[in-house]
Image (cartoon, rainbow, N blue to C red; front, side):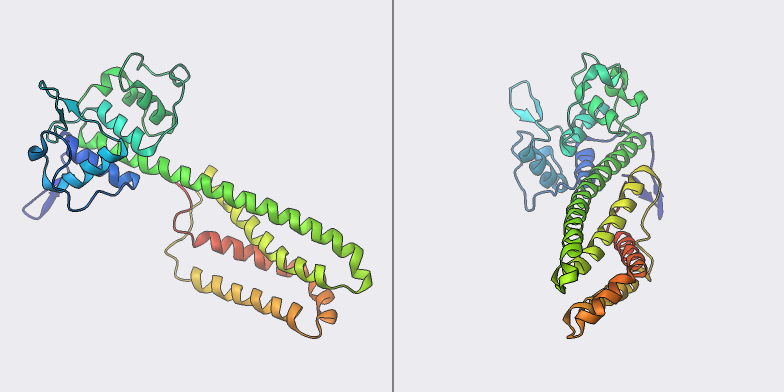
Length: 296
């Protein structure tokens, strides 16, 4: 959005946004790719849809994001150049983000009876819409560029929060599985170590670093969800340090498991595991720092 005049860029926040413009922007925010080499969209006003928007319109129509309107003849039209209302934009975003329906009564919004009321309640519950944007009067107003920018920024944040929560749940489950495995191996070690069987201890030495890494990653991700803690993705020192610590872990495993003197080395290495525990906890924290996007 915006125009360039004389080498200067103007946003013009009060200017309205067309249906085609908002659809293309909303699809980009939600990660829905437009179709390529589209010449016919399926709407009867296809000739009025700009060429740059036809791929987005076709993709959105196929995904069920848009349905169009009915012309007096009964034919479906998209009305690409028509100003989009806040209600129409809300419904588009709700479908693109695949929001779960929330009870309208629990939302506490003044949208009872409005055709876009459910979509507004869903987006308001996710923090995409503010209460002022979620009234019946506001939903009927044309969408300005400033309001569109707020909507799209909120949609990106909501999508990032959901992705971060999914990662947290997955890694939390992995951490619980590793913790259970570690507890089982620890119990086996207590029973078999006195008989000279080093196999459970070797397995425990492999499981424990993985558990510590997963635990550190999970704790930082949980903090990221409730605080402003964010990874330093641009820090040039993070990746080399992660690989250096990973190399130390591999060397640790080779020394403790593969060498013929493992029967002598294992008790000593395991006895000094406080320092190695801190090392692998740090490795998990650094792995969290290297992820593409930790949270909203």
